[in-house]
Image: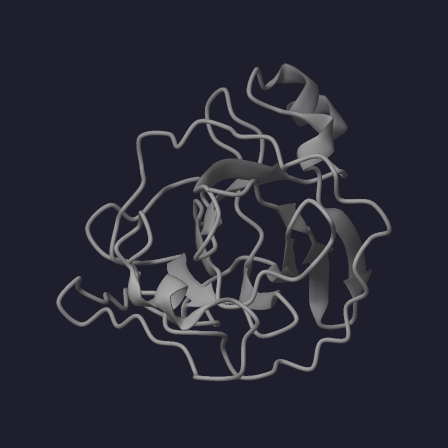
Amino acid sequence: MSKRTITRRTAVASAATAIVALPLAAFSRPSALAYAFSGPAADRSLGLTAPLACTRATPRKTEGPYYSPQTPARANLREPDTRGQPLVLHGLVLTPDCQPVAGAVVDIWHSDENGRYDNSGFRYRGHQFTDSAGAFRFETIRPARYRRRTSHIHVKVQGASTRLLTSQLFFPDRPVENARDGIFREDLLLSLSRNPEGWLGRFDFVLSPA
């Protein structure tokens, strides 16, 4: 199987500059993930409506053994040779009072269609920054399950003035696998639907202040 590898030397973290309510000083410091906060990304025009209540921060989950730092800044994680089912993952990053966290970094990684992780390159790994509405959007595939784990997506999320969140997202159409996974939490389920192009998953992150 052919493999497109992006080395850590060529990984680039970038975000478009835009007006933001947070102080500029907040964007001058690096995140805990070593990606510099530089303001919100260009408007993605996703039109996502924030929930009415965001008082509870998104639960934390273990990072696991397969995290790689310094991933590429990109929205499309799909590979030319993939046999995985297409998935669009999108959502909002919000404060506990449902305000958008503009310019937050969202870093994701997951297994491939065979349940394997790429630990030498950046296959199905990448990060981006939220726009002024707190929105993010990744094009990727549905990860396969592997031994003792249900299908899941790893995430690290941090705003310029928030704590770092490390967690995992799960799929609601895998109830049997989910029930057997000791890490699974129901409140980390994606909102999942299907369309002619593939799957659409949404999850809104609520971050605690720093």
